Image (cartoon, rainbow, N blue to C red; front, top):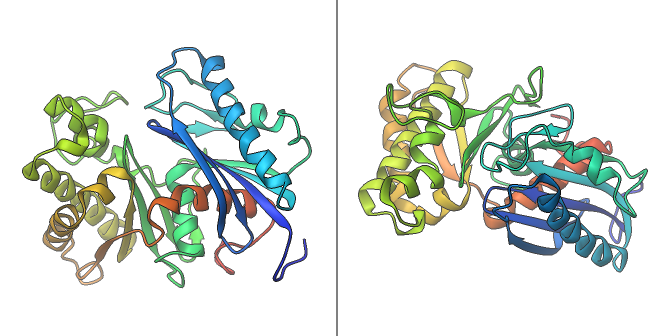
Amino acid sequence: MAEGAGDPQLCLALDVGGTKLAVGVVDRSGKVLFHDRTRTPRATDAEALFRVVADLIEIGRRELDARGELAAVGIGCGGPMRDGLVSPLNIHAWRDFPLLERVRGLAGLSGVPSSLDNDAKALALAEGWTGGARGERDYLAMVVSTGVGGGLVVDGRLLDGSAGNAGHIGHVVVEPDGRRCGCGARGCLEAEASGTAIEQITGASAAEAPPELRQRAGRLVGRAAASVANLLDVRRAFVGGSVALGYGAAFFLAAQRELDACARLQFSAGARIDPVLLGPEAPLVGAAAVGWRGAGLDVLGGRA
C-alpha cells in the first residue's frame, strides 16, 4: 500500500457500543473524513440488531466509495470476545455472535482485510497512534461509558492475551462485596462506576448524576488504575468514554487523588491519569487503527 499525501486508500471503521453504533471513514494518518451514528437498539434478536449495523456500514461504504479506495475494515466492539465471536455484556442480543464473519460477508466488503478487537484495546491503539500516548511505551487506556473496558500497551506492544481480552479492567474488583456485576462477580469496576451502574443506583440518566456520584466514579477508576500501575509498572493512564469525559474535571481530580493514594511504590508513585486527547473521535480512530493494523500498517510506529 503506497503512502503519502493524497493517498486514496481508506479504512471503513465501525464502533459497536451498548449506547451507540458509529461508522466512519478514516485515512492512513488517522484523520476521520466522515462519520455517522445511531443509538444501539434495545433489540433482543441478534439478526435485528445486525441489520441496523449493516445499514450503517452501507452508509459508510457509499461515502467511502465517493472518496477513495477501500483498503481495510476495522471494528471495535465491547467484549468479551473470542475468534471473531462477540458477547458484549451490555448488548444482550449478541452471545457468541459471529460479527467479524458477518461483516466480511456484506456486499462490497468481500476480500477486504477486516479485523475485530475490543473497543478499549482499540482506544489504546488510537491514543498511541495519534493521541496523548504517542511516543509512550507503557500505558493503560480505558473506556468508561455504558460499560468499562481497558487496553494495555507494555514495552511498546499492545497486550492481546490468549483469547484477545487482555486489559479488561472493568472486571477488577474495586468494592469487595459490592454490587452484582453482569459477569456474575461482585464489586467489579463496571458494576460500580459504569453509566449502566450509575443509572441503576440513581434511577435516572448517568448524565444527571449528583456530584458525589461523579466523584465516586472517578475515585474507583483511579483505584483500578493504581492496581494496574502497581502490577505492571505503567505510569500513564488515558481515559475516554461518555461518563468520564462527560463528568470532566470532578471525575479526573478524584481519579488522580485516588491514584496518588494507592500507587505508592517507588516505580508507581507519581503515575498520572488524563482524559484521552482524541476526545469523541477516539472510538472511530481506534476502530480504524484495528483495521489498519490488521492490514499491515504499524500504527504504533514500531511498537505494535
